[in-house]
Image 1 (cartoon, rainbow, N blue to C red):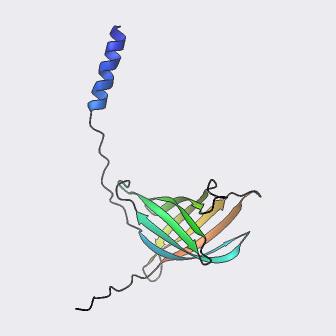
Image 2: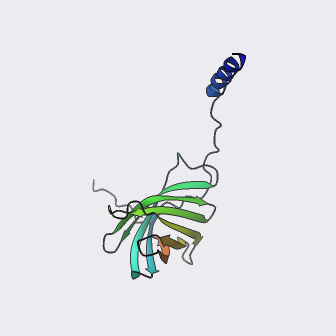
Image 3: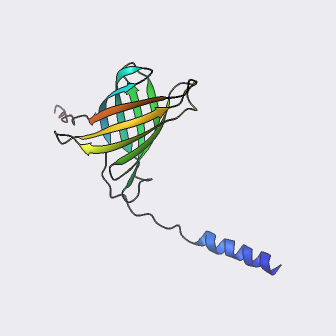
Length: 153
């Protein structure tokens, strides 16, 4: 009985303790849209646009958590998440079709600045399928920021 009371008290004490605060995000924010060129065994060469959007609530220290979306030139869409620590990115995303919803593509990338100063990355990915899988690469460059249009007064 003493053990039960002791265990119950311990549970209440630990439950009352505040959660350990994570350090605020202090890494590089890679949010933006990227123009990409890719190639794989099944599709060949293709173009797509990748968008990274920082999830500041889930990001901590040098680790940024991102919403990852992509759309190919023929309107095929992918949705998922990416984690970036320093300049290394891991991403997992799914094709937006009912047939492929449970087959995440997984990619690894290294981010760097290109000659014009924009962020770029080279991604190596694997997407599972019914025929043993598909490997590919994508080279992506952040789109130039569009100038703000001033509203007419």
